[in-house]
Length: 437
Image (cartoon, rainbow, N blue to C red):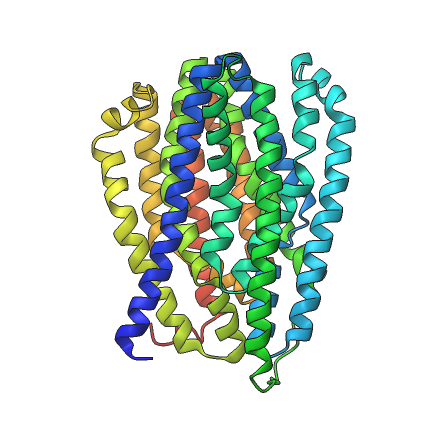
């Protein structure tokens, strides 16, 4: 393949990943806006609470399998070992289904006690409906990482992140047009239906891609390396489990800590500012996962020059795509927030603070994926715990004193610490990749 063909192939791969995340963002904003209009604030609050519970329980149930699954599949297929790759695939999806069923049963049984503990009795039935989505949600997410490991990152991210909100938006739009109108229970049943469709589609896509990947691996000669074999899937997952759990907690901790200290309007403004700032995080994450399988395969083969090239492409693409929205958030936060009816001084300052932190995220794009795909889960775990410590410290000191600005500073500090820490530790843990750049 010529240099020009490589550049075109890499560019199309990265653009497809960004397009998927763009579709996800558009569908979620459309879904939330329509739900707010049709359901009202009380029902919308129940819906968001159920989404939060689903995310936390699902993350706990996945056992940290996601990134190790992608790495093992890509690395074993790169060395023409389809037997090991098949074992990883079956084990990952089997564990996802079993853990999903267990999580669903636990949440269903705990729905009423949890609603009582929250002093929200109306939440019990919605939580019970949400529990039914968990087996399918876990299969979809772990199956998405299977596709990432099989070098189909675009499909994996579409099925995990974009398809469910797209289906839910369609269901809500249809319900809103019917005489009975929409309800929070109907919206939650649409989550269950969307996850069933996404899980079935994911399994079908993974089976189709596996057949072609296995055939390609069978045509190559199996390779052996002097380096140590990969750890078992569950052993590798133990290193990543705290990372995934902390990530889920960090997404909600600043807002939860802010809630007792500000009005509902200010809390809503901060939530909008946080979601706007995280748009660039979604882009950076997507770009990294589009090259994750190649990084895992090239690292296993010792093709470090290829990894350097992929890392440069990811960083350049991240800066090119993230710089314009970051500038808009910094220079024109008022009009931007006005699109979501959240133009207030506290939200403007919050979005500007978090936009500055996103510059660090864009400059260090791909470092987390490099650490994950080269097997440095413990390093990522240490960084996640440092992030958690920063957030807890901010929740205790900054947020009570400075409100939304304190929550934004806490979030920004955690993002910057993670981005800079990942970049520094990637250079330390994989010096061969950064030897010439």
